[in-house]
Length: 593
Image (tube, rainbow, N blue to C red; front, side):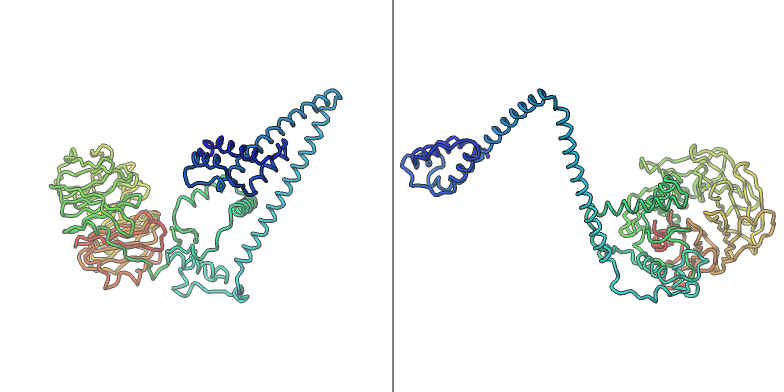
């Protein structure tokens, strides 16, 4: 330390004086000197003279005795002597090396001696490496044996391997199927799926039940073994490394559970009969409306939810299923909002109502721009609007059965589609190639968006006036809601060439005018609602075309449903009602929001 360096000369002076007074002989250099110096501090001390005590008081202050520091002083001196000895030995060894090199040069044996020395050293190095590898492999083998012993079941029933379970009869067991064609499962596979189902339903952290992880060396060895096994499987299946990389990229693109394979949606095929869901805190708990919620929609990334209501407010919420905090509220003093939609790129919100203009709210800048009407049109109301899946068109419902196509980029009219009756509902195909419209004449029109022409027209069976349309994301089903409360579901592939096609199924669970129909993202569910009666909301299972029996019930506080929407991956279902609330439900079959 700094104190030792400062007082080292004084300590040396005291020690030399004491040594000379005692009459000790001068020690020689080398190891003898170091050993005697080191041993000298271990013995007791004689009585100090007055001069020594005065010097100690000067250096260490009053009340201090050098005897308490004697060992430290001797250690310092021994350390100095050791360093000096090491330096002398290095110097002597360097001199000896020079002498040896000279001798080897004279004898002409320098190259031979160096090569033999290198060979001997390399041989020793190889032996050390081999010994290290053997030790590492032995440790890894022992760790694997301990891990296998720890994972070994305390008791195993041999009859479980012979067990065969029929999963096609019981409603509780049908949810274990990964494909609808499965009927029986073996005992081990049945156990695995039960564990996976339990983990999915509980949605809890079960790390406490896992064994403690081994050290890093074991982890590296296990990873190497797994990688080798994967490589062998790829070679046997004829796959390349790029295919495996693509599979891993698809796997890690999702944060959902990894215990079940996803053949259709995030959670596989959806079983009919019972819907597994839980109610969360209301989506607009921190910003409910005093009037009817006319529009609610999830952002394309699933983290935002908008609500538009008759109180002239556009509200944005961050949806996490717990707090659902409000992000902002935008007030339009001259526009009671009847329709609000996110653009497909998620950058803007289109708000419209019974006015000859509409607003565009920019999510990035937080500013709103008013678009003063549509050039060439005389409509005084644009209360219904929706956006094409390719984000090119904003479609408004015009007068006399006209669908007005407005460019999403320029906000100007680029075309119109005219049908015979009044326009009440419309729906785009998932690829935006076709637009289906329906209205007061009970007929459904199919438009080609490339040529802007009607390519097919057919009658909706048993319908006098259509009120809602929806196309499934997989492009197979078309749902048409009528004023009578009937929802017809058609196969799109069987529509062409038929003037009066037969629906695959007619949903008759509701008896009042259908306000909205909507498929979820993987076309396994259809939501149907009516605002003319309390709790008039049904969830239809596709393709069995049956309603879920457990939800909603008579006690479910839906009230009069005015709007609803699925999140992008169907993890959440938002339902807005005429009381100004947006109820939020977590659909636990789907892993992602």
